[in-house]
Length: 394
Ligand code: ADP
Ligand code: MG
Image (cartoon, rainbow, N blue to C red):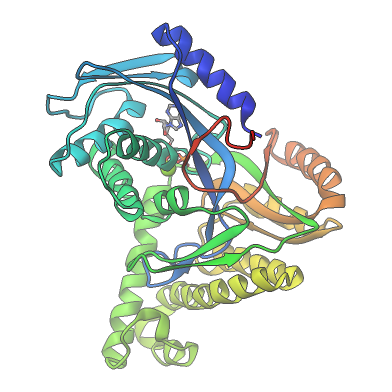
Protein backbone atom coordinates (compact mmCIF):
# COMPACT_ATOMS: atom_id res chain seq x y z
CA UNK A 1 0.00 0.00 0.00
CA UNK A 2 2.82 2.39 0.82
CA UNK A 3 4.97 1.25 -2.14
CA UNK A 4 4.81 4.60 -3.89
CA UNK A 5 6.00 6.51 -0.85
CA UNK A 6 8.66 3.90 -0.13
CA UNK A 7 10.05 3.95 -3.67
CA UNK A 8 10.02 7.71 -3.71
CA UNK A 9 11.93 7.83 -0.42
CA UNK A 10 14.42 5.19 -1.59
CA UNK A 11 15.14 7.28 -4.66
CA UNK A 12 15.55 10.37 -2.50
CA UNK A 13 18.08 8.46 -0.42
CA UNK A 14 19.95 7.30 -3.50
CA UNK A 15 20.20 10.80 -4.92
CA UNK A 16 21.16 12.40 -1.60
CA UNK A 17 23.75 9.85 -0.48
CA UNK A 18 24.76 8.08 -3.68
CA UNK A 19 24.04 4.55 -2.47
CA UNK A 20 21.14 2.27 -1.58
CA UNK A 21 19.30 2.56 1.73
CA UNK A 22 19.52 -0.55 3.91
CA UNK A 23 16.35 -0.31 5.92
CA UNK A 24 12.94 1.33 5.62
CA UNK A 25 10.76 2.51 8.51
CA UNK A 26 7.21 3.84 8.46
CA UNK A 27 5.84 6.20 11.11
CA UNK A 28 2.10 6.98 10.93
CA UNK A 29 0.05 10.06 11.69
CA UNK A 30 -3.02 9.74 13.86
CA UNK A 31 -6.67 10.68 14.22
CA UNK A 32 -8.60 11.09 17.43
CA UNK A 33 -12.05 9.55 17.22
CA UNK A 34 -13.33 11.37 20.29
CA UNK A 35 -12.07 12.90 23.56
CA UNK A 36 -11.10 16.46 22.78
CA UNK A 37 -9.44 18.75 25.34
CA UNK A 38 -9.90 16.16 28.07
CA UNK A 39 -6.28 15.01 28.06
CA UNK A 40 -5.32 17.59 30.68
CA UNK A 41 -8.44 16.93 32.76
CA UNK A 42 -8.15 13.34 33.79
CA UNK A 43 -10.03 12.11 30.80
CA UNK A 44 -9.44 9.47 28.17
CA UNK A 45 -8.80 10.02 24.51
CA UNK A 46 -9.54 7.57 21.71
CA UNK A 47 -6.88 7.95 19.02
CA UNK A 48 -5.69 5.58 16.30
CA UNK A 49 -2.74 5.52 13.92
CA UNK A 50 -3.65 5.99 10.24
CA UNK A 51 -2.40 4.91 6.82
CA UNK A 52 -0.49 8.13 6.21
CA UNK A 53 3.18 7.95 7.00
CA UNK A 54 6.57 9.48 7.14
CA UNK A 55 8.82 7.00 5.40
CA UNK A 56 12.48 6.87 6.46
CA UNK A 57 15.17 5.25 4.30
CA UNK A 58 18.18 4.54 6.47
CA UNK A 59 21.77 3.33 6.26
CA UNK A 60 24.26 2.85 9.05
CA UNK A 61 27.67 4.44 8.51
CA UNK A 62 31.05 3.86 10.06
CA UNK A 63 31.67 7.45 11.11
CA UNK A 64 30.10 9.56 13.87
CA UNK A 65 27.90 11.69 11.64
CA UNK A 66 24.12 11.63 11.33
CA UNK A 67 22.94 13.16 8.04
CA UNK A 68 19.32 13.91 7.20
CA UNK A 69 17.76 14.64 3.85
CA UNK A 70 14.20 16.02 4.18
CA UNK A 71 12.89 15.29 0.69
CA UNK A 72 9.68 17.28 1.13
CA UNK A 73 11.70 20.44 1.82
CA UNK A 74 14.72 19.45 -0.32
CA UNK A 75 16.80 20.40 2.69
CA UNK A 76 19.68 18.67 4.48
CA UNK A 77 21.32 18.72 7.86
CA UNK A 78 24.27 16.88 9.43
CA UNK A 79 25.72 16.75 12.90
CA UNK A 80 28.33 14.88 14.88
CA UNK A 81 27.00 12.44 17.47
CA UNK A 82 30.01 12.98 19.73
CA UNK A 83 29.00 16.60 20.20
CA UNK A 84 26.27 18.17 22.30
CA UNK A 85 23.45 19.58 20.16
CA UNK A 86 21.33 22.71 20.65
CA UNK A 87 18.29 23.94 18.66
CA UNK A 88 18.95 25.33 15.17
CA UNK A 89 17.09 27.70 12.85
CA UNK A 90 15.53 24.99 10.63
CA UNK A 91 12.37 23.96 12.51
CA UNK A 92 12.14 20.46 11.06
CA UNK A 93 15.66 19.67 12.26
CA UNK A 94 14.77 20.46 15.88
CA UNK A 95 12.21 17.65 16.11
CA UNK A 96 15.07 15.26 15.28
CA UNK A 97 17.86 16.90 17.25
CA UNK A 98 15.60 16.99 20.31
CA UNK A 99 15.22 13.22 20.08
CA UNK A 100 18.95 12.77 19.74
CA UNK A 101 19.53 15.05 22.72
CA UNK A 102 17.03 13.21 24.94
CA UNK A 103 18.68 9.88 24.14
CA UNK A 104 22.20 11.25 24.54
CA UNK A 105 21.29 12.69 27.96
CA UNK A 106 20.14 9.27 29.07
CA UNK A 107 23.68 8.04 28.46
CA UNK A 108 22.94 5.77 25.48
CA UNK A 109 25.48 5.34 22.67
CA UNK A 110 24.52 6.31 19.12
CA UNK A 111 26.63 5.99 15.95
CA UNK A 112 26.55 7.36 12.40
CA UNK A 113 23.56 7.20 10.03
CA UNK A 114 22.29 8.49 6.73
CA UNK A 115 18.55 9.10 6.62
CA UNK A 116 16.28 10.37 3.86
CA UNK A 117 12.59 10.85 4.64
CA UNK A 118 9.41 11.87 2.94
CA UNK A 119 5.77 11.91 3.98
CA UNK A 120 2.11 11.51 3.07
CA UNK A 121 0.97 13.10 6.36
CA UNK A 122 -0.05 16.69 5.68
CA UNK A 123 2.02 19.04 7.84
CA UNK A 124 0.28 21.23 10.37
CA UNK A 125 -3.22 19.88 9.71
CA UNK A 126 -3.63 18.14 13.03
CA UNK A 127 -2.70 14.62 11.89
CA UNK A 128 0.53 14.74 13.91
CA UNK A 129 3.23 14.75 11.32
CA UNK A 130 5.47 16.11 14.08
CA UNK A 131 4.97 13.08 16.33
CA UNK A 132 5.61 10.74 13.40
CA UNK A 133 8.86 12.57 12.72
CA UNK A 134 10.12 12.54 16.31
CA UNK A 135 9.01 9.07 17.23
CA UNK A 136 10.00 7.62 13.86
CA UNK A 137 13.57 8.79 14.45
CA UNK A 138 13.56 7.60 18.07
CA UNK A 139 12.33 4.18 16.89
CA UNK A 140 15.09 3.98 14.27
CA UNK A 141 17.83 4.83 16.76
CA UNK A 142 16.41 2.26 19.15
CA UNK A 143 16.38 -0.48 16.50
CA UNK A 144 19.72 0.24 14.88
CA UNK A 145 21.75 0.87 18.02
CA UNK A 146 19.96 -1.63 20.30
CA UNK A 147 19.10 0.98 22.88
CA UNK A 148 16.57 -1.19 24.72
CA UNK A 149 14.02 1.59 25.00
CA UNK A 150 10.40 0.59 25.60
CA UNK A 151 7.57 1.86 23.42
CA UNK A 152 6.46 4.07 26.28
CA UNK A 153 9.94 5.56 26.50
CA UNK A 154 10.00 6.20 22.76
CA UNK A 155 6.72 8.15 23.05
CA UNK A 156 8.04 10.20 25.95
CA UNK A 157 11.30 10.95 24.12
CA UNK A 158 9.26 12.27 21.17
CA UNK A 159 7.23 14.49 23.46
CA UNK A 160 10.32 15.71 25.28
CA UNK A 161 11.93 16.65 21.98
CA UNK A 162 8.94 18.81 21.09
CA UNK A 163 8.92 20.41 24.54
CA UNK A 164 12.62 21.17 24.71
CA UNK A 165 13.88 21.69 21.15
CA UNK A 166 10.75 22.89 19.34
CA UNK A 167 9.14 24.75 22.25
CA UNK A 168 5.66 23.25 21.86
CA UNK A 169 4.17 22.04 25.14
CA UNK A 170 2.21 19.20 23.54
CA UNK A 171 0.44 16.37 25.36
CA UNK A 172 1.39 12.73 24.87
CA UNK A 173 -1.51 11.52 22.73
CA UNK A 174 0.14 12.12 19.35
CA UNK A 175 3.37 10.34 20.15
CA UNK A 176 1.62 7.51 21.93
CA UNK A 177 -0.70 6.89 18.98
CA UNK A 178 2.09 6.87 16.42
CA UNK A 179 4.08 4.35 18.47
CA UNK A 180 1.28 2.17 19.88
CA UNK A 181 -1.23 2.18 17.00
CA UNK A 182 -2.68 -1.13 15.79
CA UNK A 183 -4.53 -1.95 12.61
CA UNK A 184 -8.34 -1.88 13.06
CA UNK A 185 -8.00 -0.80 16.69
CA UNK A 186 -8.38 2.40 18.64
CA UNK A 187 -6.48 3.14 21.83
CA UNK A 188 -8.35 4.31 24.89
CA UNK A 189 -5.62 6.23 26.64
CA UNK A 190 -5.41 7.97 29.98
CA UNK A 191 -2.93 10.71 29.15
CA UNK A 192 -1.89 11.11 32.79
CA UNK A 193 -1.09 7.57 33.75
CA UNK A 194 -0.52 6.28 30.19
CA UNK A 195 -2.81 3.37 31.07
CA UNK A 196 -4.37 2.22 27.85
CA UNK A 197 -6.65 -0.35 26.37
CA UNK A 198 -7.30 -1.34 22.77
CA UNK A 199 -10.80 -1.55 21.31
CA UNK A 200 -11.76 -3.08 17.97
CA UNK A 201 -12.84 -0.45 15.46
CA UNK A 202 -15.76 -2.19 13.81
CA UNK A 203 -16.68 0.29 11.12
CA UNK A 204 -17.40 -2.05 8.20
CA UNK A 205 -19.51 -0.31 5.59
CA UNK A 206 -18.37 3.11 6.74
CA UNK A 207 -15.35 5.30 6.15
CA UNK A 208 -13.51 7.82 8.23
CA UNK A 209 -12.96 10.91 6.11
CA UNK A 210 -11.22 14.09 7.17
CA UNK A 211 -12.08 17.48 5.71
CA UNK A 212 -9.27 19.97 6.11
CA UNK A 213 -10.68 23.47 6.53
CA UNK A 214 -7.25 24.83 5.56
CA UNK A 215 -7.64 27.59 8.12
CA UNK A 216 -5.69 28.11 11.30
CA UNK A 217 -6.79 31.03 13.41
CA UNK A 218 -3.99 32.58 15.35
CA UNK A 219 -5.76 32.83 18.68
CA UNK A 220 -5.20 29.11 19.20
CA UNK A 221 -2.58 29.53 21.93
CA UNK A 222 -4.35 32.23 23.91
CA UNK A 223 -7.67 30.40 23.48
CA UNK A 224 -6.08 27.26 24.83
CA UNK A 225 -4.62 29.03 27.86
CA UNK A 226 -7.93 30.79 28.59
CA UNK A 227 -9.77 27.46 28.53
CA UNK A 228 -7.27 25.99 30.93
CA UNK A 229 -7.76 28.89 33.32
CA UNK A 230 -11.57 28.59 33.13
CA UNK A 231 -11.32 24.88 33.82
CA UNK A 232 -8.80 25.28 36.66
CA UNK A 233 -11.08 27.78 38.33
CA UNK A 234 -14.00 25.37 38.06
CA UNK A 235 -11.96 22.47 39.40
CA UNK A 236 -10.75 24.47 42.39
CA UNK A 237 -14.31 25.22 43.42
CA UNK A 238 -15.49 21.66 42.82
CA UNK A 239 -12.76 20.28 45.04
CA UNK A 240 -13.45 22.85 47.73
CA UNK A 241 -17.06 21.72 47.83
CA UNK A 242 -16.42 18.00 47.37
CA UNK A 243 -12.95 17.24 48.73
CA UNK A 244 -13.68 13.51 48.90
CA UNK A 245 -13.61 13.20 45.09
CA UNK A 246 -10.27 11.92 43.85
CA UNK A 247 -10.36 12.46 40.11
CA UNK A 248 -11.99 15.21 38.08
CA UNK A 249 -13.76 12.60 35.97
CA UNK A 250 -15.59 11.36 39.05
CA UNK A 251 -17.50 14.59 39.62
CA UNK A 252 -21.15 14.30 38.59
CA UNK A 253 -23.19 16.87 36.70
CA UNK A 254 -25.27 17.33 39.88
CA UNK A 255 -22.14 18.32 41.80
CA UNK A 256 -21.16 20.67 39.02
CA UNK A 257 -24.59 22.29 39.08
CA UNK A 258 -24.28 22.65 42.83
CA UNK A 259 -21.10 24.66 42.36
CA UNK A 260 -22.44 26.68 39.46
CA UNK A 261 -23.14 29.97 41.24
CA UNK A 262 -19.75 29.97 42.88
CA UNK A 263 -17.66 29.17 39.80
CA UNK A 264 -19.65 31.33 37.39
CA UNK A 265 -21.23 30.53 34.02
CA UNK A 266 -18.06 30.31 31.97
CA UNK A 267 -16.25 27.79 34.18
CA UNK A 268 -19.48 25.85 34.57
CA UNK A 269 -19.90 25.59 30.82
CA UNK A 270 -16.30 24.47 30.29
CA UNK A 271 -16.43 21.83 33.02
CA UNK A 272 -19.83 20.64 31.82
CA UNK A 273 -18.35 19.99 28.40
CA UNK A 274 -15.39 18.11 29.89
CA UNK A 275 -17.41 15.85 32.16
CA UNK A 276 -19.79 15.00 29.34
CA UNK A 277 -16.94 14.43 26.89
CA UNK A 278 -15.11 12.09 29.27
CA UNK A 279 -18.24 9.95 29.46
CA UNK A 280 -18.69 10.09 25.69
CA UNK A 281 -15.25 8.56 25.16
CA UNK A 282 -16.18 5.47 27.15
CA UNK A 283 -19.49 5.19 25.32
CA UNK A 284 -17.79 5.63 21.96
CA UNK A 285 -15.21 2.92 22.66
CA UNK A 286 -18.02 0.52 23.44
CA UNK A 287 -20.08 1.58 20.43
CA UNK A 288 -17.08 1.11 18.14
CA UNK A 289 -16.29 -2.34 19.41
CA UNK A 290 -19.94 -3.38 19.09
CA UNK A 291 -20.22 -1.84 15.64
CA UNK A 292 -23.03 0.47 16.77
CA UNK A 293 -22.17 3.17 14.28
CA UNK A 294 -25.39 5.13 14.55
CA UNK A 295 -24.69 5.69 18.21
CA UNK A 296 -21.04 6.45 17.59
CA UNK A 297 -22.10 9.05 15.03
CA UNK A 298 -24.47 10.62 17.50
CA UNK A 299 -21.65 10.90 20.04
CA UNK A 300 -19.43 12.61 17.47
CA UNK A 301 -22.20 15.12 16.77
CA UNK A 302 -22.62 15.79 20.47
CA UNK A 303 -18.89 16.40 20.81
CA UNK A 304 -18.96 18.95 18.05
CA UNK A 305 -21.86 20.77 19.57
CA UNK A 306 -20.07 20.77 22.96
CA UNK A 307 -16.81 22.03 21.47
CA UNK A 308 -18.64 24.73 19.58
CA UNK A 309 -21.10 26.06 22.17
CA UNK A 310 -19.79 24.95 25.59
CA UNK A 311 -16.03 24.82 25.21
CA UNK A 312 -16.10 27.42 22.42
CA UNK A 313 -13.03 26.36 20.47
CA UNK A 314 -14.59 25.99 17.03
CA UNK A 315 -14.72 28.63 14.30
CA UNK A 316 -17.10 29.63 11.50
CA UNK A 317 -15.39 27.48 8.90
CA UNK A 318 -15.51 24.30 11.01
CA UNK A 319 -19.06 24.93 12.21
CA UNK A 320 -20.21 25.46 8.65
CA UNK A 321 -18.42 22.36 7.44
CA UNK A 322 -19.78 20.12 10.19
CA UNK A 323 -23.29 21.48 9.98
CA UNK A 324 -23.46 21.03 6.22
CA UNK A 325 -21.85 17.59 6.37
CA UNK A 326 -24.37 16.40 8.96
CA UNK A 327 -27.23 17.23 6.59
CA UNK A 328 -25.89 14.90 3.89
CA UNK A 329 -27.29 11.46 3.23
CA UNK A 330 -25.17 8.65 4.70
CA UNK A 331 -23.35 10.81 7.24
CA UNK A 332 -23.55 9.19 10.65
CA UNK A 333 -21.47 11.73 12.54
CA UNK A 334 -19.23 14.75 12.08
CA UNK A 335 -17.15 16.87 14.38
CA UNK A 336 -14.15 19.13 14.46
CA UNK A 337 -10.98 17.29 15.46
CA UNK A 338 -8.06 18.62 17.47
CA UNK A 339 -7.46 21.71 19.57
CA UNK A 340 -9.78 23.91 17.53
CA UNK A 341 -9.90 27.27 15.75
CA UNK A 342 -9.14 25.48 12.47
CA UNK A 343 -7.74 22.20 11.21
CA UNK A 344 -9.79 19.18 10.16
CA UNK A 345 -13.21 17.74 10.77
CA UNK A 346 -13.60 13.99 11.15
CA UNK A 347 -16.60 12.39 9.51
CA UNK A 348 -18.14 8.95 9.69
CA UNK A 349 -19.79 8.31 6.34
CA UNK A 350 -21.39 5.27 4.72
CA UNK A 351 -19.08 3.98 1.99
CA UNK A 352 -21.61 4.38 -0.80
CA UNK A 353 -22.17 8.05 0.04
CA UNK A 354 -18.55 9.16 0.52
CA UNK A 355 -17.93 10.49 -2.99
CA UNK A 356 -21.06 12.57 -3.22
CA UNK A 357 -20.63 13.99 0.28
CA UNK A 358 -17.09 15.07 -0.59
CA UNK A 359 -18.30 16.66 -3.79
CA UNK A 360 -21.15 18.54 -2.12
CA UNK A 361 -19.21 19.80 0.89
CA UNK A 362 -16.21 20.87 -1.20
CA UNK A 363 -18.52 22.95 -3.41
CA UNK A 364 -20.42 24.48 -0.49
CA UNK A 365 -17.24 25.28 1.43
CA UNK A 366 -15.69 26.89 -1.62
CA UNK A 367 -18.83 28.95 -2.21
CA UNK A 368 -19.00 30.10 1.41
CA UNK A 369 -15.32 30.85 2.14
CA UNK A 370 -13.59 30.74 -1.23
CA UNK A 371 -11.27 28.03 0.10
CA UNK A 372 -10.60 24.65 -1.50
CA UNK A 373 -10.90 22.19 1.37
CA UNK A 374 -8.65 19.14 1.35
CA UNK A 375 -9.90 15.63 1.87
CA UNK A 376 -8.08 12.72 3.52
CA UNK A 377 -9.62 9.26 3.54
CA UNK A 378 -7.99 7.35 6.35
CA UNK A 379 -7.80 3.78 7.53
CA UNK A 380 -6.81 2.72 11.03
CA UNK A 381 -3.35 1.21 10.79
CA UNK A 382 -0.32 -0.10 12.66
CA UNK A 383 2.02 2.09 14.65
CA UNK A 384 5.66 2.73 13.75
CA UNK A 385 7.34 -0.30 12.24
CA UNK A 386 10.07 -1.44 9.96
CA UNK A 387 8.96 -2.24 6.44
CA UNK A 388 10.24 -5.66 5.42
CA UNK A 389 10.21 -6.10 1.71
CA UNK A 390 10.10 -9.88 1.44
CA UNK A 391 7.92 -10.56 4.42
CA UNK A 392 5.14 -12.15 2.40
CA UNK A 393 7.30 -13.97 -0.12
CA UNK A 394 7.58 -17.71 0.54
P1 ADP B 1 1.10 18.44 12.87
O1 ADP B 1 1.86 17.64 13.86
O2 ADP B 1 -0.34 18.61 13.25
O3 ADP B 1 1.23 17.96 11.47
P2 ADP B 1 2.94 20.46 13.74
O4 ADP B 1 2.97 21.94 13.54
O5 ADP B 1 2.92 19.93 15.11
O6 ADP B 1 1.70 19.92 12.89
O7 ADP B 1 4.21 19.82 13.02
C1 ADP B 1 4.54 20.15 11.70
C2 ADP B 1 6.04 20.35 11.56
O8 ADP B 1 6.72 19.07 11.65
C3 ADP B 1 6.46 20.91 10.23
O9 ADP B 1 6.39 22.32 10.22
C4 ADP B 1 7.89 20.41 10.10
O10 ADP B 1 8.79 21.22 10.82
C5 ADP B 1 7.81 19.03 10.75
N1 ADP B 1 7.54 18.03 9.72
C6 ADP B 1 6.44 17.28 9.60
N2 ADP B 1 6.49 16.48 8.51
C7 ADP B 1 7.67 16.74 7.92
C8 ADP B 1 8.32 16.28 6.72
N3 ADP B 1 7.74 15.39 5.92
N4 ADP B 1 9.53 16.78 6.42
C9 ADP B 1 10.12 17.69 7.21
N5 ADP B 1 9.56 18.18 8.32
C10 ADP B 1 8.36 17.73 8.68
MG1 MG C 1 2.18 18.16 15.92
